[in-house]
Image (cartoon, rainbow, N blue to C red; front, side):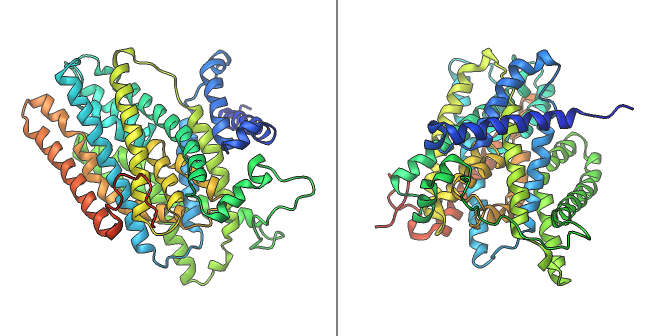
Length: 475
């Protein structure tokens, strides 16, 4: 009898990389000094393995993307099922959504602006949609960037070189990961030096267990979870996992129901359907929150243990980040190396600055933690943001992660027109009618203007205080 081993082979390889990374963090001062997350170290080990050694062994990265997709959804379900304080959360949640939408608009403006300069100067054959890859690769991640790029390949006939749009999308996403991971570690250490990290977190980072990543032989660790069921009947972890996987199944069925009628809308409907599946974590989190609310109504929410959900979410994030970095394919499209380099570097610098600038003025609590979450999400993916957040909030005790979960519904609703806008230049190329170009530019200008207005109203007097300072600190 033959069994399918591929999934567990990949999980075993990831586990070995995480074990090596844990040993390195525990023994090597460099990793301790810069607080490099074990999952990130493991990811770079996997990056080398899957691009150099794995092909000779008949292994590939094709399954790692699926692991990242599902583990991200599981981590969001786990966080959505946790009990959390919603006191004052309305403004925090909306502010989080505004900060994400604003950065999408900023990245589109940077990408389109630089692409337009290349088109009118040294690279007239460059496809205008190239400019969207900064927001797609940095902001949305490899899945969306690759999928939308592949869709553009079929529509780019007659436009030299854009047959590699899918691969270009992956390159942007890969560079975004590197910028997010390396830049995030730099930000954490820079923030410590500047005093942007609160005293309690700063003291915790200085502890030996935080630096090495492991507790000593005679050191008693904190309680990570408590039992909510009698093990004789069902193990408490089994009970929490059945909730997570049950929610995931319902979310899958909801997505099937939502996307089924879109097939009748043709190619645009298919693109929207693919987009909805790409952000399935939004649906998963919503179903999780509804499940938690139902359990409260039935008065059985006492069976939910926050610590257990933290363990499930934390384990998912570790394996997810390692797999995500390991899945990057080192593909070089030499024809586009210059515009790729310029857009990525300029976009990365501006994104780093604006994340610091906005979060320090927009929020009244946990500003630096929120900055790390936003920065990770706007350069890598949500998994990058969660991994960086765990350095300063290892137990997800702050409302930062949950606010991000709750804000995704708003972000998703606001982003749908944006996703449709990025496909309009295709019609300009196909028909020659510039109206589609002006609709695109006007639409994103409106997004940027409304984002600035919303930011100003939410941040109040701090909105444009000390404009030359990246980080706002009250006198």
